[in-house]
Length: 211
Length: 211
Length: 211
Image (cartoon, rainbow over all chains, first blue to last red; front, side, top):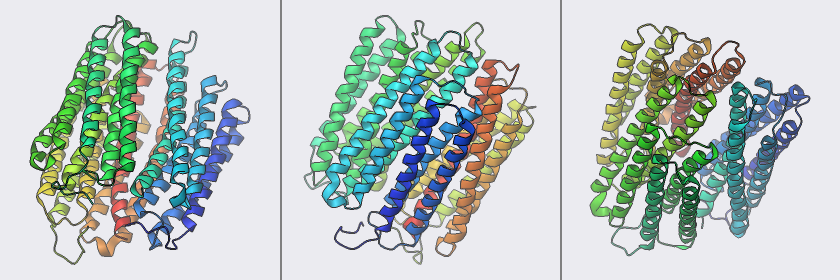
């Protein structure tokens, strides 16, 4: 049973989730930079790996704290799931970047930039939603607005992904192996956005429970 | 805590879920028609988009109602998840249709027709299961029969998908790009069936809870 | 509400889950043998199908028992989900094997062997974790150690998968259709490992709930 909002509960969870989303936003911005310009890819991928590791450390601390805290501000399972979903976002952002290196991509494609930008927007909405959870009771509606926007961005991402694949399959003079590589990259970009939507669903579930 | 079946609860949720499954069945039947005969594809895809939009509207109304209703016939979270899974089915059905247009497919393949038919069967079973949920207490066993059938259809779909891919990879004289396009289409067909199974799992979870 | 550990609850669930994991380990070992040496593939795939069927039977019995038992050692829904996730692992192991037959693969690739070995390790950890659940109260920490190891193996699997795909895309003289086939096989191997991690998550959720 969740704790009523008037009781003092452990506010550190919010600090932890905010730290995680700050790291995710940083990762997403680096991915956008990297996708726009593939120069210095190796250096950027080293930094992206570091950011992903920072996220892992905070996630791990969140799990530890969850196991030790008696009163949690929301259901323990929901906080656990939220931490796991946030981790998933950064994992996919990093995976996306790594695929550029692994497949030795030297020229970018416009849809990749559009998808990377959608990721930046979606994680920023998520960060805003999580910031509002600290004083959830009065702000459910404002949180909801951010979740709706994430949902809209995910739909937009789907459209861009769909068109990107269509264009890729029709492109003359592109080696089929290159089509396969780009399909993997578009998929990783789309999975990153999907992961944002999954995190939004967890938060939405919490709101429904406390409605 | 769920409400005992004797108490009057809001029957409108069932009406809403029934409206949604009617829309899904319509979408699945259109997809089957479209896959069998790729003439007039553009007109049919416009209609499919409309059907998907109708589903979206009902899903949105269901969410709104869930947030406003105090006594729900089953756990609020379960109804929320069910609505989300039903939405997912129609999304995949529409996505499948769109891929035929996007990839400029002009000749169908037999396995696509078989998979589309399995989708029609699975969504019809789902509609039947949901119709019975209105008076769940006495009908758990009959609901279960439909869920088992959805599970069987999903297994059958897996087999057809597996064979479809095997045959696709072995086919002489097919351009590799066309292999890629059909793989995307077969996947969308299979994901539509998977989405039916996920919705069946949610219903099964509700039955287990109320056993 | 879960039953306190001092009350006598139905120990048969543990026996059933142990039987299932024994079957899964057997399936994983057969897959490893098969991947290492593709001779006698047909005979081995028949045996793999049998093993998968044995797993299905136990899963089905577990579901039946769950529906009939009043006091379950953990939440009914969690046990249901655990049974479903274990079933998923064996499904993917079997699917992986079948793809070798379906795609008429005659020469193996080193990363496939490495991934098959990770699967054997992950399912063994899972079997060990489930063995400890019988007397969970005193052993939460030891169970957790196995779950952490499964998580580590999943990360290792991701790395191997990533490299396998990179190498596949760069390989000179490999037909693109063969690239597609191997991609499907690597994916099935990776999904088998993912399914282990999902089962570990369910167990972790149970531990968090009872912390």
